[in-house]
Length: 260
View 1: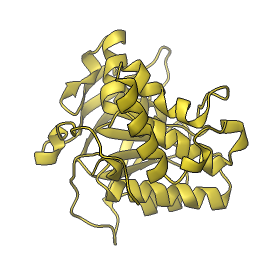
View 2: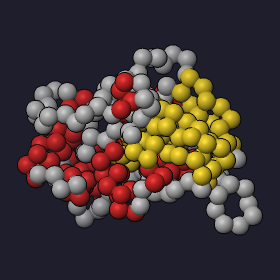
View 3: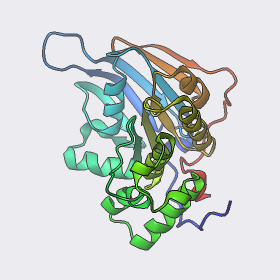
């Protein structure tokens, strides 16, 4: 497949040379009331090019952890560093800039805008970041081709299958060349065939060097797409184990193959 020539690549994330892309240290997150904290003494490191699945029962702290990494929430104590940025120290405006520059997000229910075409949904992050229109359109076209949904470029999301809509959501998440892709239950709203399609897609993206952290209740997704699984119970990490059969050599620039 021929992909349009990309603009000059962004510098590789710091984790490319051994420093973790994600470095979470002794994080605690407590909310009001007398209940236990949502997270209690969590430390986690993720290297560039690594894929990590986060599992656990409802209420275990998975979504809280993802929100802290995304800069949507702040810890009560401890530190969260992503690609050299102390996310826990950012204000609201700084957090928004950080997400535009460093993080792509994929959600269970896609979060696409139904009144925009596929390509216009994909272009949204570039527009918010103030990128040039011509460059952004070249990037979007390359992503849609890479993700095999270019035939739907001018369609509206309501006309697509669940798996196709999730591919559009992934293209949007990759638009600004994020150091990190966060996926929150990306197969949770899909039938089994579409879920298999998204599993294969995430595996391919990671093989192309994209760093991924995904939260899931799907054991097949956790096993197929990740180098290791982190299990949370009652706000604590109770297991952090590599997967047998997954490659050990991780790295790369965190840029999908469309940029190569």
